[in-house]
Length: 247
Length: 332
Image 1 (tube, rainbow over the protein chains, first blue to last red):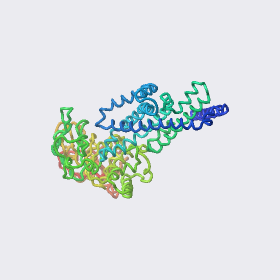
Image 2: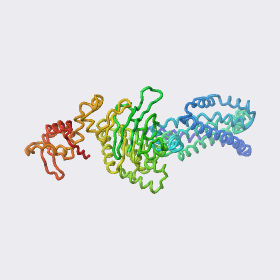
Image 3: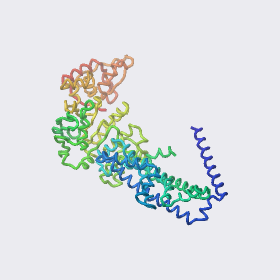
């Protein structure tokens, strides 16, 4: 116990030290110069990125939750597999291929990017919603019914709270992956921080590379952190134990 | 209070009927135990009462009203329901669990809180200590107590209990059985209680209904069933020790109504005292275990009344089987 705690602490400090060294190195060489020299351009790219991720994730969350709840109802359980199949397909396709296909139908720009990322984001949320609701024991539902709860009361007071941890984990995973994948959106002319990263790769220019990649990483970390905070509010206290174990 | 009239349940998938033409009546304030081997339809019958399983044929009346004419949601809220795995909601605190039905019925916050305090008092748990705790923090026995309190919270006249103590260890089970009996002495309820444990059925039931393959085989008082099983099946199901089991329904007090006790041997070593309320099964077990050379019966004022021996109990047992013994009931 004690040894593993020591090891964790040492690794944590090494990691933080490494990050600090990296930032000092990058600053000294002026690799974040693009952010300060072209703040308007940076903000524009960031805004484009946030818009693509925000909208596609929002649609994905709403759709996945609705479908997830629907296919776990007794009457619709039989049609669960085609939805799961479609969602699986959405994630199995390479992200670049999804973007290309979306471009083929919707042309260039914002719309196909949002559509492609939406397709790509649905599965983790849908899968976790279905798994979370299905993992609730039948006895629990039976006793809720036996006490005279109506179907919507069972859904909102028993099923969703008990599946909340699983659902939130799915949403968090999906959005964080989405932030990374959205870096490809520039390929079909939707902009975003991927623009600078690609320029940096093409020109072998660290200042473009890092001005795009570092904010992107920080964005992903920040969003991950925010969702972990949200879990504290959404997930009932008694079901939160596994979260502290995991982090 | 609860009437079953030619109740039948058939599933499309199977040819045999899960419940076949069952009729009996549960009087108000009684506990009736549905007993039988697994798959005999006792749980199905129980779940038909609160409409969790629809009736194929026949009628079930609760308080004179046909349950199919009632709104199932309203019906369920007026019937307490306890299941083996307690079914407590892990996302809710103990308090939220207990007042869930009052909450569904729209009681005020104050009334719910008062009811919570009352229920915790009834099951002997510290209300303040457990208020904000969650079911996962409790032991199996405590969880089942909460399960019972939850079923009682809206004060339903009828309770359905599906093997409520089936998942507990023997010590906890005995504890909870006795607690439930003492609770039922304070609050009068009509109870249908599913069990596969004969001893539990004898202990808890005012009447016992024994089922086999969906059919009601015998419905009687525990003592009558034990001493006069009406078929080979019942006799075998109850076991060869059924006469011995029936002794648990009688106390030393019952025995001394028909028999005199032996005089106490003052010089005997290892004599032990037992009270008038001891049941005869425990008493004869103590004698057979040779835990004491003589058992001295004492009254409420610790005055020795005489010594009890196994031949006295045996003679009394014969009287029970002949049907001449009077049942006073055992005080737990």
